[in-house]
Amino acid sequence: MLLDVDLALRKLVRLVRGVAESEEVSLADAVGRIAAEDVVAPIDLPPFDASAMDGYAVRATGLNHERLKRFTVVDESLAGHVAQRTVTKGTAIRIFTGAALPVGADAVVLQEDVARRGEAIATVEPVQADQHVRRRGHDVRRGARLCQQGRKLSIYDLSWLAACGIGQVCVTRRIRVAIFSTGDELAAAGNPLETGQIYDANRFAVSSLLREKGASIIDFGCLPDDPEVIRRTLLEASLGADLIVTSGGVSVGDADFVKAVAEEIGSLDFWKIALKPGKPLAVGRIGDALFFGLPGNPVSTIVTYLLFVAPAVDLLGGGQLTPPLTLPATIDHAVRHAEGRREYMRGVVWVDGDGLMVAATGDQSSNRLATFANANCLVVVPESIGNLKPGDTVGVIPFSGEAGHPMRGPAG
Image 1 (cartoon, helix red, strand yellow):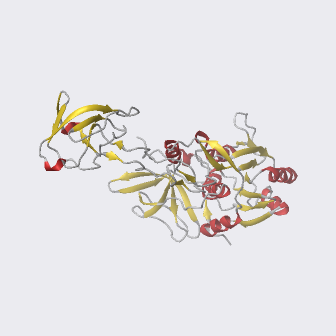
Image 2 (image 1 turned 90 degrees about the vertical axis):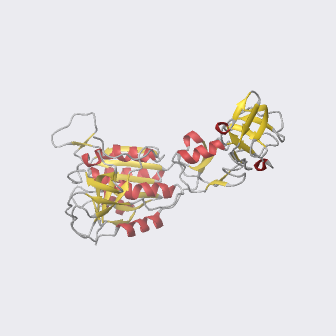
Image 3 (image 1 turned 90 degrees about the horizontal axis):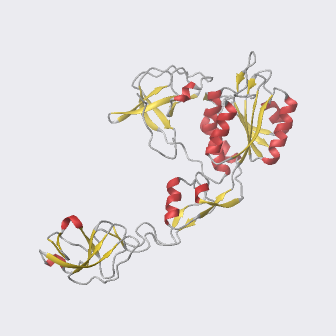
């Protein structure tokens, strides 16, 4: 019987044992890493009352009783250069965005709201206390939590830490992942193909995706369909890795040895998911290492990585399992789909009027890496429904893209 995708994910959460070791790294090396402890602000941000605009720092008290307000400019305050004079009634200090508010001032009058002649300025605009002023601690107060233990640190998180003067952060150490592909038919890219061979793309895809998550890769290469070689490699991998990820050898063919060997030297917690593509996914443990036997078809390998391996790496690092962002979209073509397995098609989603439209990227056969080439999302077809017709609503999971940059629609 096939295991429901959501139930498989719940089983995975119970199976993962997070690593305990942590390390201090520079902010530049912390992108995508998991915070090993709460980070609190060592200073107020901003650390002083500052101007939010270019203009003139004044004292607002009593000014709204005067229609025409006149001031004498006695000093200036620039970012990094604090004014030496104090603001008193009837005086003003020229000030620029980000500069410290002078002593005695409690408001900033915009430069475009005043008329200036020499050192004299005048305005008829209302002046309220705190207008155009960023008070000390407006962004964050000293001692406040900037990020929580277990949070995956984004560029934006780390920019906030940098603004607070933090140069290093404590993160969970990198997850060590052992990987290999299996198959007598596989050849390394760059080498000539023999008759009946294909190039090994799966190991490249998985290792590249893992590096994006900050994992440390132990690459055992491409193994032959030899159970003894597979056994030795799995045992060696289990000694130094937190996670073992293999590609191929977990289906029911005569040369599919990985699943059988993994069961022999370790344990499998589940196998065969109600999923398309990626049904023959094997998950368990070998020694202290978590084990994923991914299917051998390239698209199945990537989809099962995205759905299961990627969140497992986050969990190992102390992160939380959060469901992927899924948005409703209208599919623009018919889709043949048999009930019973949840399907994740590769698609292109774009904005159309007030909503989203989505189209699959051609033939969705599990061998066709071309379906990922122009895709910017996965299209989720639930296991409980059959064929789709144009105009039906589906869920789409956008790919995160590079460093959180906005997702773009199809080119051309």
